[in-house]
Length: 226
Ligand SMILES: *Cc1c(COP(=O)(O)O)cnc(C)c1O
Image 1 (cartoon, rainbow, N blue to C red):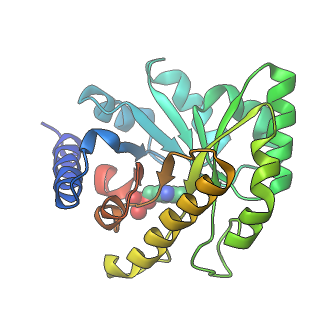
Image 2 (cartoon, rainbow, N blue to C red):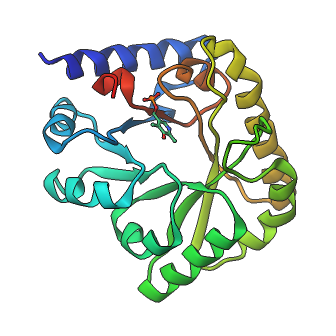
């Protein structure tokens, strides 16, 4: 079997152990294999051993790959979506993880409406307050969420975050737990469930699962270092 197959088996087993530690079902956590920068031949190896969901962060790079992989593959957009790429992205991606400001959400809603689609999105949240990060601040989310939930062609499925880079995954724990608490607060305030929490990457996905992640986005631990 290939390295990619071995890596996927190892990741799935680590996901299960993390879920077990906190009494969760691993079937409630989706693995997005982040295939950005990798060619279709490499992605196909993961497909052949059962991986079905892939993550890309550039529309232009993703579209040819999506055409080459089986049509049943599911693609998530995990990057910073530029407004001039929305029209191409909407039919190609099942879920857009990084909606990080109200204007972008409003544009996605408008274009989805024109195309007769509903766009499923996650709102990227900057819980750590790092200046270099994209995303809504918790307060901006508290202010804007009701308006975003009322957009008819936008379906807000939950929140997404990236923890600051650190050698020690424990440093990400407060960020992930803050995202979950913010989600709980907003869900109860708006009476809108916001079921998805997209958090955790190669370096910190186990901590993210312990803190409630429903989607982990893992690239280098599956495909190798870029
Ligand atoms: C690249 C990327 C990942 C995957 O990172 P790895 O450390 O390679 O697992 C996850 N999320 C986002 C938003 C990314 O850009």
